[in-house]
Length: 572
Ligand code: FES
Ligand code: MG
Image: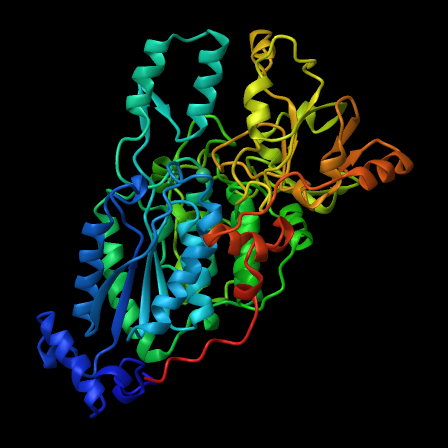
């Protein structure tokens, strides 16, 4: 214990003898708390990203009660505080537009209120990184409680995976191989309980990354949302944060180069979502730690993919992963590639995974028989993406990883929607579909449009994958040969803005290249004639976002949140 009650932040609200402080105490008493219940105790903010429209956090009101139980038991005072929920499926145009909003909200809640530590309750895709980014910038102790994956989907005895099977069966429906009634029945079996997508999508990826960063209790990342181990973990996290406050174990003390590299290695070995790249870069930059696309690629090249989960594999889901040994078994398997002395909320990473076992080596593979010999993600550069692009090659078609074909260009998502299934569209299986206006500025908000659907006439011919290139992201549950996050984006006049129908595009994943095969004189002429297509928004959050957001390769944070002196604590 390094802190005394007088050292607590909340002491400045409740512990001193001033008129203001008396008023603060009186207002806690108004809420029904007696002075012995709160005086001299750490006040823990439970930042809860619950809402009635947050499909993945349906258990969070109840789970917050479990966290509170843990906080009380350890001698703290829990205060549940709602924050914007970011429901991945409902929120338009993209939850990514609001990741930085939630990060800023988290930081400002913590700064302006009498809080000594935070329990971060998130899970659905952008919520986890947002909460963590905010907690880093505020610089007080925080622990992350991931929502946990939902139960496996089930349809006619087959396992269904969130997202992945929606794309898969929708293609079959469009190809006419299943009926509308089959589809309707499947729809009812897809999402069976509270919890996040149970494929290796962004939510599971970022939960694993958070555990590898040292921000969760051991094993927290993979506990299914409705398993009784989940409320036990939540209560334990509530207890632990109280100790962290006394120890002054702030988030920034947990994060360093070792923990960031551990998170990247875990993400790569998990075959995780491409979304982890901008999220982990943003987290690193907030914490002042070096992280860029090259570091991802270098770690990806040395770490094999050992989690046999959809969308990389064919069958297994997060529930299977949990039974197979879960995140502890997974990280223990990966131990030779991890810095085990990295500090966590609970000691060291090595201590967190000590003794962990794996019970099903088909799901969590050994390093000697990995699912894929290298990490799931590759960083590409070339004349089409001077500042980088990303491909999840573990979920792509091996025969398409080296491919040259003519571009079929869509100006934006509406254009794609209007023309994709046109029988006269000049497209073959060898074409390269190109989509622009889907980056951080162009979307706006960097939507998940990168897995463009296959044109209907090609589906009918049996085509199920094509090379696709965009400045968009794609869902972590998506698959196919999709080149994503092209930077600079088209809205800023990057080379993607200059592509025309019929231009040859060359993809070479082993060589880490993506090139537009048009000579420089022609490109210069096109560049000189180029004008921005979409005017920036004029009001509200989107205007602020477009003024300040960075490109994909730098993590898409807002410039004034990524940098700058800490805002001083309000004095009165
Ligand atoms: Fe919430 Fe996938 S929609 S985690
Ligand atoms: Mg997603």
